Amino acid sequence: MRTPAVDLDTRTRLIDAARELFAEHGYEDVTVRDLCAAADANVALVSYHFGDKHGLYTEVVREAVAHMRAFNEALEAA
Picture 1: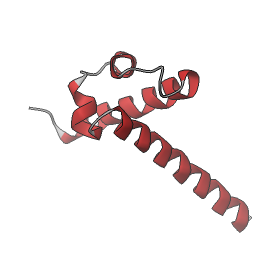
Picture 2 (picture 1 turned 180 degrees about the horizontal axis):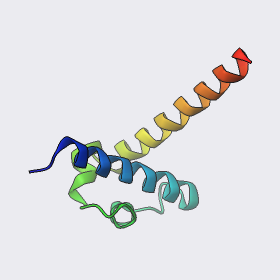
Picture 3 (picture 1 turned 30 degrees about the vertical axis):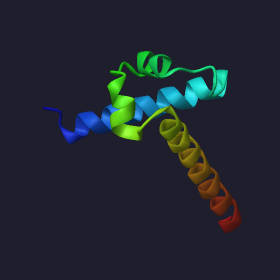
């Protein structure tokens, strides 16, 4: 049985791999198998954590937007 920490680590590895591969190759040219190979994760875990490739892509975009907002807020505060 997986522990929550292991699940979180796998989820993080998938997001990190997706960020890199989507940026380098684009959404259409990256497969779930590519993502899982880069993240050292089982293909089924994309479905488990994100529903599908689009869900993982959405999470990567959401994370990027959050970083941009935080950066803009820091600039405004300075």
